[in-house]
Length: 411
Image (cartoon, rainbow, N blue to C red; front, top):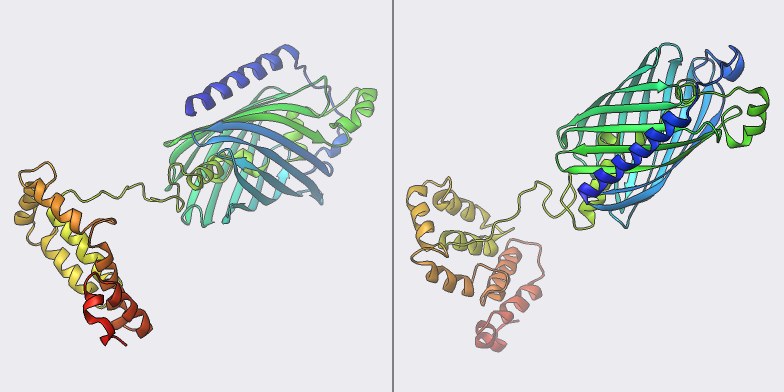
């Protein structure tokens, strides 16, 4: 699936790039007062992205709308949304608010508050954003702090660059780092279709140490000079904003699509995959630390597990800790001896048959004496306080042989 995502994204990117260079034209010059040039947001406008793709977790698809409004001449506010499915069937939804100051000729600086909800789990982020404009090049930076039930609380950062080979074609990319993900990156491509005002095609690939996500789709820009609704007016005047104009003078990228790894679609897909039985991610999955539990294969480990099963959550827990401190083959006080004994009684060792017999009796979830160890654990928990005496009696009666022997002596 990972390779398919890469190939699909590469193919889509190639088609879009070829189409762009063949059909894209230099945007017509626009007068200084049209579209509010010089303002942070020229006018209230709306964008809608419809996307689909996939990765090692399965297919993903959905929609991402954004509404951008001016707050005076220098400040703008953009409200982002996103909703869809990842890992084939895991539903999600999210929202973000981007507040920013912008000089469309030189820079943008702002702050973002965002969050998403995924099958009962929520994640939030507060981020600072900035852009610097140098001719047809945009330098991008994001530094944020994320918190919630998906990824442990941590800082993350992204540095990126976008180049406009012509005003209606954007090629972008960036590098991302966080403690949970490590180093990752993204590549982005978008082209505005000059024959259909306000319509663009886009493709994005995001990759990290665990795999890659590829997605693409169609994006619609709605504004007085750029939308399908304004097509007649635009053609009449022979003027319309280019893709670079739209990005610098009207709106910002949807927050969830602009940084897929730091706080976006790649992160949501990995979380959905963990909930759908895939690789654990962050705090989600059976083994969020990426370390599978190793089953016991020797006598020392079997005895440790059996003793822990009897004393777990009881007043005798310290005894188990003391025994482990002494006999643990890795770092116990008697490791020099117990390590050799563990090797000898390993299932492949000279005394492996002895371990198999002991495991048939105790030490595993379905061993013969599992009901006994469970009952003893419940009794010890009851003696520690907080358990009804009748529950303790019921457990004693379930101990093989003992319950029948005591008969009516139990209350």
